[in-house]
Length: 391
Image (cartoon, rainbow, N blue to C red; front, side, top):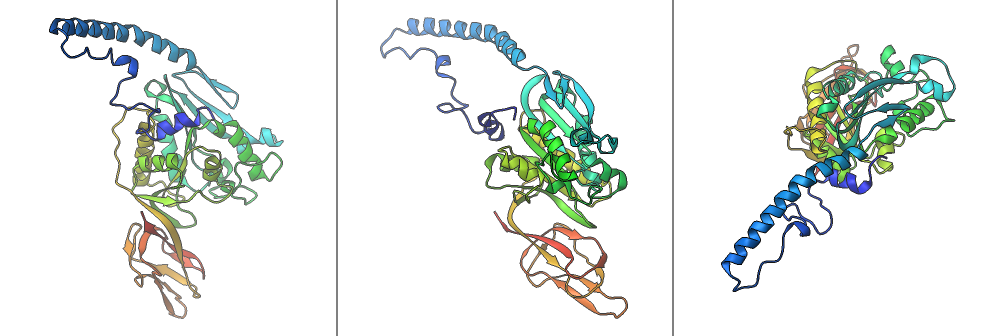
């Protein structure tokens, strides 16, 4: 990765400082000489104070251009997937995993947008559309890179707004071979199609990340309360999650093969943002996602922006409430975000042919963080996702 772990730890924990320093204390060489011993003449003190003031002014005037020159010398172009991006530039280019996995078909070609800021800073990666039916995620990424010029940026923004191109084109969640791309990272050059695509993108682009936000929505006719998911035991990842500014943070490194887990396993903080339904563009969830990503960028020192954050609740555990033995129409008055108590009726599944109706009952206290929209429900189908055990 492009920055050291110590640098990233300081970025993700603004209250953490180098050993032996504190923001309220100037460096030892800037504090000036020790105070004269008691009994020294007042005139000597005045002369010493004037000399110190002049020295500090001269030092400040002369040091500034030197620091800028040093920064300019080390802050140069970045190369991503064979493309060079200079400070202040935005470069858009296609990455074609088929070229890596031995094919010629451009149907897998995906867009990468790299903006190199004019000032040094971390590299933030945004990924969206890993699942081809998750429209909100794509528009969040688009608004971020389209609205972030290099002249206003410190660091580098790398966006992959449509990772699963074939899925987006066909309106399908998965790849053409029916595999879930988000179970294939970091991938292998000799594995399945999903594994080879994951390997190509991970090695060519994602390995540059100092932090990653993976954008998602609910799946399979479900909707999610806006939420961040990450490993609560990782302080840098938790700091990213808190800085995003949505009201719910869920604990979890993610399943094996997920991009979030692969990046976390590599020692880099990563979170996912989940909000809304699949196959829809929902303005409220998109706007909230854009605001959250900008909050993270401000937290990392990449943009100058006053953060707009909600206080968040972290849930350490979640569980699904599933349909019982009956087949029928699922209906519910509940909404994402509702607090429920054990024994509360959450909805019903009614067979319109027999009129048999089964109540869906909360098995514990919790908060609805995701739920199915009204639909035909088969036995065992996940209807409500509850968060519990809050911090």
